Length: 234
Image (cartoon, rainbow, N blue to C red; front, side, top):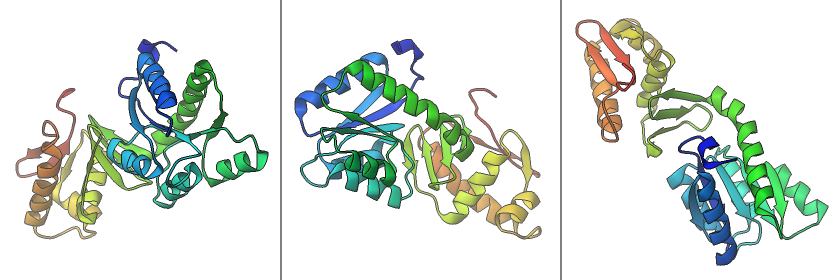
């Protein structure tokens, strides 16, 4: 795969405590067109997943603090479905099966060829595309993951209250459509009649959080309601 064939913005996280391996993998994957973050410990890997929201993690099993198996266990317990490929010097079938059972997507044994790593990354990312499509709601650079209940704009995590989340969810489900105050009250607050000021207040909360990271997405239709749309394609 050439750099031009890698979808723009595809983020990888490479985790290994051996600087030489970390450098070779990161440099090679960047050359192919991926955005690559790096970590040398298990705890740093967990923090990097939260900070960078990678599309895939290449994860060494043997790490100096917590091992790769524990990293995957904690990711899955936290609700993360980020694909993981183990890098392992262990050739024990039991170890490999155990890692896959924890929720890893594939494994590569050391020493490895860079061409094999690139091929495994492409294959796992392809498998994840159909899963991602079903769980992601998108408008411009705003993404809502309905499995992990995470919202990101331009890759940055946006912290929302439960009501703000429900409001944005309904707007995303109906992007490019005007939603009346009554419709929003019915679907977000579960009552069809009420104070339009409640809707206005929560729209302002959403705007404050989303607009801090990019152009405005929620438009007001005076006397009617609101519409969510990507201004770049409007």
